[in-house]
Image (cartoon, rainbow, N blue to C red; front, side, top):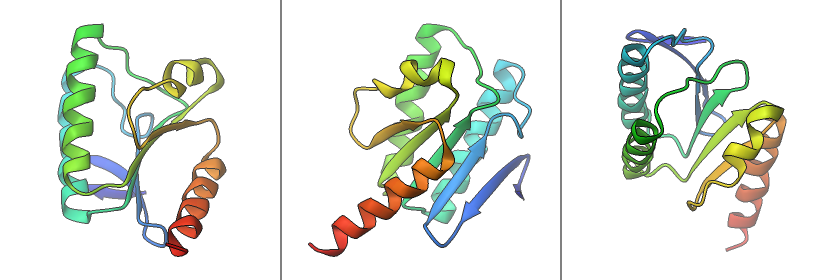
Length: 130
């Protein structure tokens, strides 16, 4: 893992993907969430990856429904403003149903990181022919 300010992240430069792992970043309260996600968004702006991955397999952070809607929209809008093509949520079996039905284009949920890599590879192959 790499370090940027107070956050840890993975940078898969070969596929232009930046990963933010909630477990590795020890998010325990709302203040941690705001600070660390803000720094991650700043990092995305500097790196300008094609893909962003929020890894929530080991830990998810529960916040109020209203705050979640607000931050989710704000976070995703900001990320997409940096020309990110797709955002992925890597979640466990229990959380999968919550994330798989996100009704927004270019956002996907997966249970295995290899499925994320396969999706990117297939997407890149499909775009290669156009």
